[in-house]
Length: 376
Image 1 (cartoon, rainbow, N blue to C red):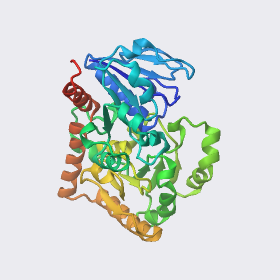
Image 2: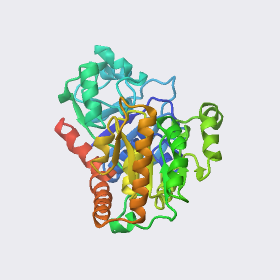
Image 3: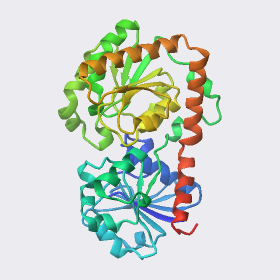
Image 4: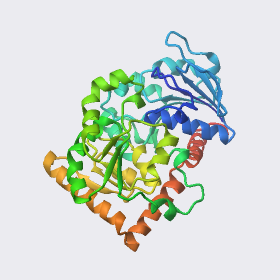
């Protein structure tokens, strides 16, 4: 197949960037999916604002200057996929041959500005199909924009290659954790980090010696260090000043995967309704127990393996009390695992590696595109 993916966000990245710098979930997914499609012998092009055009990992990475017009070579394709944001459909549809499906692959919730253009029926109807990352997200788009569910398909995100166990015993990944235990927070700072820092002293009092590593910043959204500090510097400083907390910031995926090998629990008091959650998928693949919120697509993402705490309609204090209790229980379980908890953790790791790799996801994309009439 010949497939063009276009990210018009203005970010400077190509498909190799995910190994070198922190990237957001959407751009990371683009990198891994396209690399795997190329590995499976498909002809793939990524159009972005890269400052390093050329072939990376078998993918043709083309530069998109903001003032440029569409290069006809990008339109000579079997399928054209717009990444992340709506707003380009009415421009692209007349330029593409009628046989070429125009697809919007979007990971944002319906209420974010990036997809507000879908309220316009002309923009909405310009796309032949929509790729969502959860059933929860798909249902919300159907209600908010009146999109026929038949025009949408769900293709969840997957774990980075660095998190795959590559044939190792899942139990060996799940059990050799650091002692005293380490908790981790690996999402962006506005999704519950403030709640976690408030709660951590009580968690540490119940489990003496427990440590918290915070892998979080806005650098995954291409923020400069200055702008990141202006937005959340006070919260980062609070992390640094809290006993037992190590503020590390965002890391490229290979480094994060190595760090999570020692982490016992992903402590994620999520307050932001996510359409999918790669941070949770990768923690689960790393053998971490997960404590998070019953919110958004997290129940769908965690597939029954996480401790989910109701948050909607509850006070901050009530939620935090239960989060502390569940996290302490998870930490104590790490120290004295039962046969049932070990079996569950082994199944968790195996499930992530069997069902949520980019190799699996790329094959699903190809099968779906073929069902639309795209030639193999």
